[in-house]
Structures are given as structure tokens and as C-alpha cells.
Length: 197
Image 1 (cartoon, rainbow, N blue to C red):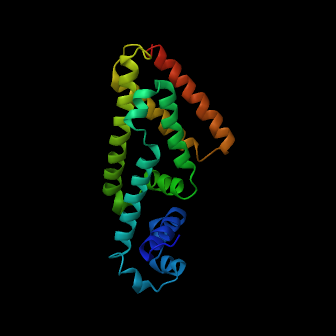
Image 2: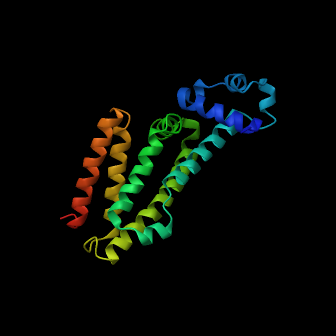
Image 3: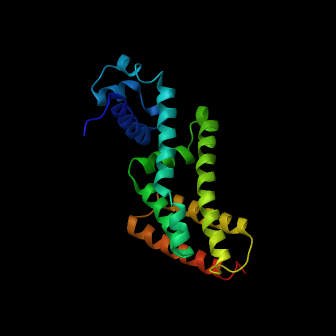
């Protein structure tokens, strides 16, 4: 499969931004990996900021694609497997050596000059996952899989589960992390089944 020059620039820039961050990456580095001269980059991107913002937007778009659960699957599956599937989708994304690293770097250590843009992108992805969670929990409440309780605390608790696991992902081996994720999810589900009482 052949890639366009623009795609190659983004591919190598993604790796460098993930490994070195915005300030640790130069356009010379990107051009060298692509096999072109630095001035040729400007035929595709206005400057380094433009390239970085493009990479971040595609990172968040990829996150949305990876965690997606369509409405037909939500209607045909039970609540617990759907919630676990969403969690596994997120974990698999975090485990991607390049995407996961850039995602961590971007959210935990945002470059100051891009903080507002990063926050805006994050809110867009959170809105998307909130819609998925709202649909899953609402169906579970309607069909009696989850006892009557307010929707918002369920979503908030799930996000706390995700946030805790997101941080732990970078401190433990894959097998240790997977065990922690399994335990955390099972306890979350037990609390959900009794209505958080």
C-alpha cells in the first residue's frame, strides 16, 4: 500500500510527537524520516503548529472510531457486556504504543500553548462516549438489568473507573494491568447491580 507524502508526514510526526512531545520534535526530524527536505513540508502543512493540531484531531478521531459501539449492538446486547466492551475498547487504544503514548502525553501533560485546543478536543470525545454510556445505562434501567437509580451518577462512576485505569495503565505490566482492570470492572458492576447502596 502506498501512502501520500501528507500521510507519511503525519505518520512520522505522530511517532515523534508521541515519543518526544511537541517541543522535542523538529520539522527537520519529521522531514528526515519522510525522506524529504524541510521546505517540502510547507506544501502540506502551514507550520509545526498546523501539523501538531492536525495530528491531535486525528488522534481524537481515531479514539472515537476505536471505542465506538453502534446503536444496533446496544439494542441487541445486555448491559454488562456492553460496558465491559467499551472499557476494553479504551484499554486497547491506550495499549497502542504510539497512539496510547501520545494520548497520555496530550491529556496528562498538555503543551501550554495548545491547552485550550486539547481541552476542546477532549470535551468532544467525552461527549461522544457519554452518549454511548447514556444509551447503554438507559437501556439497562429500562429492561431491569440495573435497578432504578439516577443516570448521571452511573456515568460519573464509570468515568472514575476509566480515569483510574488510564493512569494505572502506565505503571503496570500488561498482565498485571489486565487483572486490575478485571477486578475494578467487576466491583463497579456489583455496585451498579445494587443501585450504589
